[in-house]
Image (cartoon, rainbow, N blue to C red; front, top):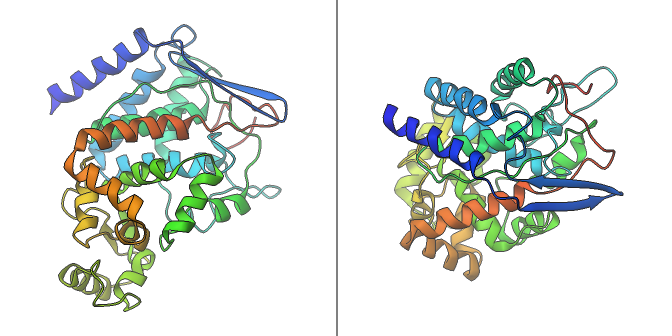
Length: 332
């Protein structure tokens, strides 16, 4: 394992050293957001190694943290773009996104981001944005869990505000059907193909019983081909033993801490944990066809996931210009 992690670190350093000069540009309300590879190569070359080191420690201490940091990036980008708005704490005069329904008592990893930011502020004061930290930490979490690596485009700015309403409305829910999922992704410029590939992030992590209650409380047709009765009975037993608000189940019960294509294999076997997972195999012929491709060809999943992560990570925001926060929890 130590050798594997060392190789990962070397590859990440090479990504920075030999990064492409490709750029993404978006213009919102007259403000141009430019993302590029190797963005901190001159201003803070220590940035990615520092982030990797902290993520490595966090995942070593708690393997579930890999999924949590990856999810943090998703929930950030789906609300007005990838601008670290999700990190802002509530104040007497400000309501952030942490208490929105998809985030409350659900999002984790804020302390890891705090530690990374504190270290970077010591080495490179007010150079690396919190939004870029989230994006790189998400990539590193995938790599440390056995998944693919990719170079992250950076240059994001941190927002001065947040939107609890947008968090409630924009982030796909665990009981969404395929048309709803497609609409939520299309609203931020992501395609059906992106949606299926990015849903593969559920190959890691856990969910509370309350988020998949529709799968186990008889709301599905017991004769439906997407029902695996043995799997559902195991979930019913798990969730009947204690408070469903605290009991957790693995999103991928076969390889819960590994980033692989098992999520798609589970779905085809009727063993998707969330209703929004299982419906990908039954609610649309197009999504089922993509799932079958990923089951047959894990490399195709890895390639599509990388490309869709780059696409999602390039969602622009910060119409007011943004800033580099000194503390990720509060605007300067």
